[in-house]
Image (cartoon, rainbow over all chains, first blue to last red):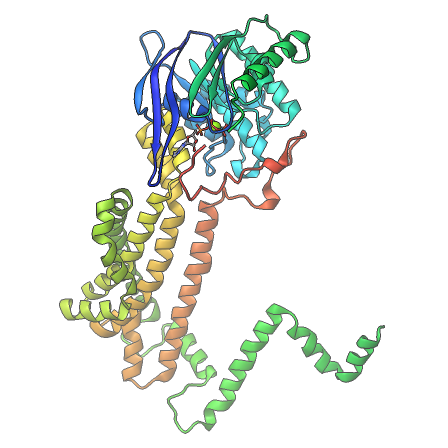
Length: 246
Length: 304
Ligand SMILES: Nc1ncnc2c1ncn2[C@@H]1O[C@H](COP(=O)(O)OP(=O)(O)OP(=O)(O)O)[C@@H](O)[C@H]1O
Ligand SMILES: [Mg+2]
């Protein structure tokens, strides 16, 4: 049950010619076993936010606190692209990020490969898989460490509708079962409504413009009226905030 | 049969036709050109006003005798080549021992790059002949001059390739292993080292090619043994078939190293590289169009 506390976060990218503000004055908190979606238009700083949370990027200003009781939170990250080691087999890519070794660990990795329906590719190299298959290996890798906090950056956007749907179900089931904390970036509002307990909206320039609870009971049928209504409501907010305009 | 075909048939006599169709086969054409060359060589030499040009058959007999260790040279072909290989091995080892740290430094630290850049360019441009002469002058006859020549001729290739390799370690993979808290040792071993491999190979290949030439010269110049020196022995002995024969030994060895040793090694090291026929068919429908060429490490630091 990892909790996140982000305070006055700001991130600038300084290049030779310009300075880009990717995150501007963002503060929010995420409690244990929440499922928070981050939505917003392309280039609004969603990936940057996850990169700062995971320690890949450092903040220009502000603080990030991730706590898991009194130990360090274990972090799983599904990147926007698969980011597999091309020279290691699929199963070795999963084993690479494990903190311990042993037959149980291996069995666990195989179980999560099976979850994304890729058990048969365990001995193959990533280059032998399609893009969508590689993305699923990335998902299995993040699940396989059984993280306290799961960061996911548009994990299903490269997948076909059917695969994405079944993986959404898997993700939801895993979250319900283990009550991990999940921070889920997406630009698909329906997906956010279907899965999350809360939705954070970022606008261009990295400003946080809305932080809304989603008060619908699970399981949520994406085809149901309640979900459709919530989705329509969110999209209206999007438009009223003029988020989609440049 | 078409008109064109009939015309062809009429135009060429049967044996001519066979040669014609043979020539259209790349491999056959290659073999034929060699056979033609050797035949012409054999036929022309007796008419030359000198006996310092060997015929192919003389060269072949010479090489055969050398291989059977029947030689008037002080060392057999095996002894000479194994000595040269030892010098090559020691020299290349030193080139890597010096070049890898320098390359790492240049790739990782900008000031080191500024500092060393011009020397690397000079090193790349320097003919290995010069290294052979200089090393011979400094170290006199013995093992040292050839070894130093090999090292000097190869080291800049190692430096430049390692530096380039370090700059090309895919950032998104380093970030991935950082985000998952993978240990530094495992990151070096499984992320950095494998992405340096193509650059190590390039260093080895170019370094070896350059060093091999330098070695022969250094042995001619500053040694009393080794394959290069034996060439000079045949030169002094006015045995042209010895020079040509040894040149052929050199070529055979070089081809062996390139094709068999490097070919096998790189096929094994890069066995993870995708080839079209090894792709696994997707069991269920998935968007194949989105296929990310993830098997090739990105040359530029990745951003999302
Ligand atoms: N390493 C970097 N150097 C310079 N600018 C960067 C860098 N990373 C991100 N940016 C800039 O920061 C802004 C936010 O980028 P980010 O990748 O976080 O967007 P995003 O919300 O994830 O977009 P998308 O939905 O398209 O993935 C963009 O304007 C981008 O150009
Ligand atoms: Mg992004």
